[in-house]
Amino acid sequence: MGYCYETATGRLCCDICDKAGEVRKYRCPFGYCQAIAFCPKCKKEHPEYTNKAGHRKNGCEKLMKQALIKRAKQEAIIGKGGFVRCSALSHAEHPGGNVKVIFRGKNNVEKAFWMSKETYDSLPLCAPFTPEDYRKQGPLIEARNCNIYDAELVPVLV
Image (tube, rainbow, N blue to C red; front, side, top):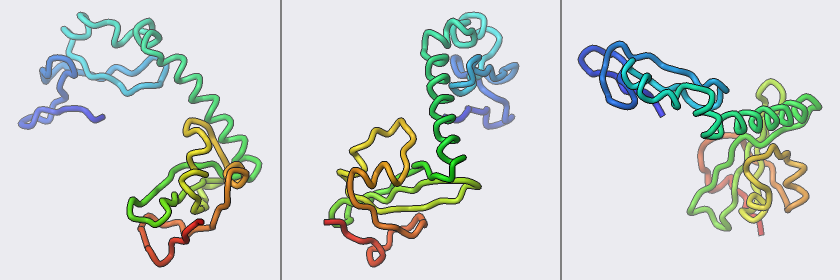
């Protein structure tokens, strides 16, 4: 989510009361969630939005630790020359409901594969997976790595 700015002056607005001027951003103490914009009055009235205790209560500390563990796993896979899932695309009108999955490796080099929706759905989203992990679940077909849908280039998995 972005920030709100006053149209006439371009000044940052408070996320609580919408007041513009004397507003500044306060970062998450754990580096997990987006900074919040506060005027001095709202910052004083809502310390839970800026202190460690409030962010810890909202799960920021735990979620940041999980994110760092996931990132370390991804970097380890990529460091060994592997590729890690970074995005997936599907097209509602595509016969068979195939999913194009893009994997990223060293130097941001990417590979893409088509797979069935069942194969894609067989592994959870919140963990780093490789093409080899998906191959164990079902067949993969190499795909062009572009962001357009081209019906003639899309193979159908049966």
